[in-house]
Length: 570
Image (cartoon, rainbow, N blue to C red; front, side):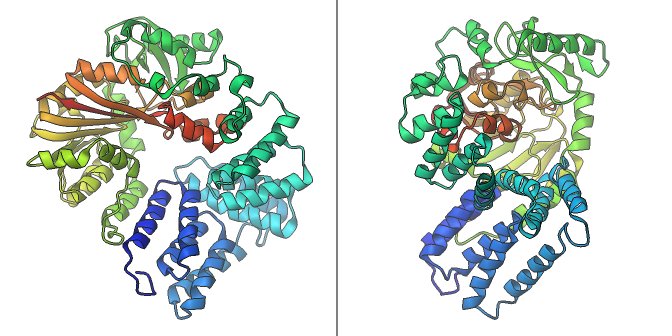
């Protein structure tokens, strides 16, 4: 609680907003939210403590310690703050530089920074601390470069701004760092400094199309400087209305409209086709016609990850898919080995057991809940007598946890044994296996959810038809999946999120067609920038694109996460 005794609901509302942003991984926005709150209410100790914690997670120990000391000024007996300061100062003194030569410390920090394990963020934070010490104590310029890069990746924009400015003092003509300077100022909500940095980039590199796009939005520059053939031209030559799905359009030509979204040459496409031919003789794969239209002709798009599967587009309907497909045995083995290990379940346990903040429980998936609320979830709930939900591929049950809070009776399906065991301990009804093989589902569900699941199944149309048969009249189905017709996918090309674990890659058009083919009436299809962020971040940065362009992409409904809502007709 707030130490000054206030019970102002708006304070807790702002605190919840900051913590929601932190859970989403948007730590820079969480920091801004909490700092704004503390400027108005400097003695709000809960907010101060959470802000110090977020700074420490980012490796910015100096900022964390500063806030903890401010907390102690008004609460000198706070043993938790005293202990945390001691721990952070010890961590700082025991960083990679301690007891090592500068070369050894740099090599150790570099190893942490380039770690590709599932703990990559925690390793990056540890590396950021080490590089920062090397920079501040030894003035090492290479460490300064890594501080700027890692701080940007971890969304610690104040630290990134400090490091970027310091580098530009030494290299004032660096186009790369001038671009980054503009991007940081944008993230921090500082429009005029961002515009000035982008103008300096164009003075040195007039062909920087991404920077031109930033200035069209931020400063009102003309979009005529952006070539019509460049993907970004779509942001300024199309209205929001043009980006909406028109079910009356000729769907037989969908694949032609999608063709220009993939910027690879003939050799790349041929490489995909050759890999597809090789796998057709592999017992772990099965050659099958297109799941949506039954077509048997495909053209190459990409290869899903290093040593991944061939991703191809059906020439009949435009659905992008792995061809040939891995067998169900291959998929089940892969998911059992890679998904929901001990660390993931420990994280889920903490989320499920976390107490409410203030008076209202905090959702773990605000993007999903905000979307559904915007589509009329509250009115829908009042119209249903039982509120029965089925979450397909429920994972650690985060979505079910949120709906249980809203009074729903939640069931789920899952293939991971650790996740199933964990959720049954929590009192959920969980069916083991893939949907097509489960025979004892209760049926009459008011809501069925498939959050990042439909792209993993071998027969999505068959699964949707089964779901339709299990739903109560007027029930909702909610689907999220990566969007393959997005502007990010076009900018990144083959580097986009062609995950080797995914079998299908939907556009808004192909998802709508499939939902309708299963008997549903589509209510809404939207898209935001999200799931492919890490895989195309390098391309985004290379183009010099700032957050204003990302916001415009979402306004134009051209993001790379699809949110789909459909109904079973009454």
